[in-house]
Length: 335
Image (cartoon, rainbow, N blue to C red; front, side, top):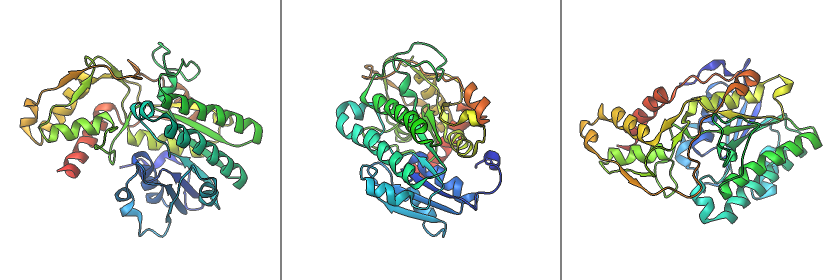
């Protein structure tokens, strides 16, 4: 599944912490690290949004360790980083709508929890801290493609929290000499992404609905577009960020995307086409168009030039190729 050239040399001599490791992105990072011989992979998760089933296949691996805890608790963070070389910080409360409905919890986890992790990593002298940033940080900036140095005003509480993460990381890097790298994810999708719940991401939600012959609801007229990014590309970016030796890359924030726009109408058409291979009747399922959603950015398209230049990031999966893999996985696992 994963290209083995994302890291220089073996991982056997290093220990890793993946916060939010029971989640979608976190569990894929855990899988990569264990498959490629990491000396130790510890997961910290409170299972608010993550799932134990995402970790089941790793439980018997002697290099794997699960720590149930909460990044809102500083002591949990300190225990989690004990003896750890590298931290992949994925723990967060995602979703723009959820942050609008409950900004306090979103802030507690995404800001206070992030600060706790920074303090714990600083005190343990971990070698590097790579954290999940977000394309929501671009806010109302109209420019396309999105370039790291040009952002607008945030459009949701979630976007505020992710921007604050970047500000804290910048200050901690400069003040304490820490090695920190942020990755602004653009609409990540792929295996293990939860299709259920009020705040499910659009691709697994739509796939699940089409499989059940239910009409998905598009927010708006379907013209809004996203830079959908397959999970393997995100894993690559994280591993490269962990081990990049270029001094200019440390302390920076990078877009992680494929660099291609897909409208929501194009997305639903592509999902139907992939699913019709398994069930031709899905081609007859219609799509419903609803109202626009608060806090949504109309269009999202990333420049990945900076990540390519400084991290050596080269996405291996296009939207089309990634969707092919993802839909096949969902068909096997949702039936």
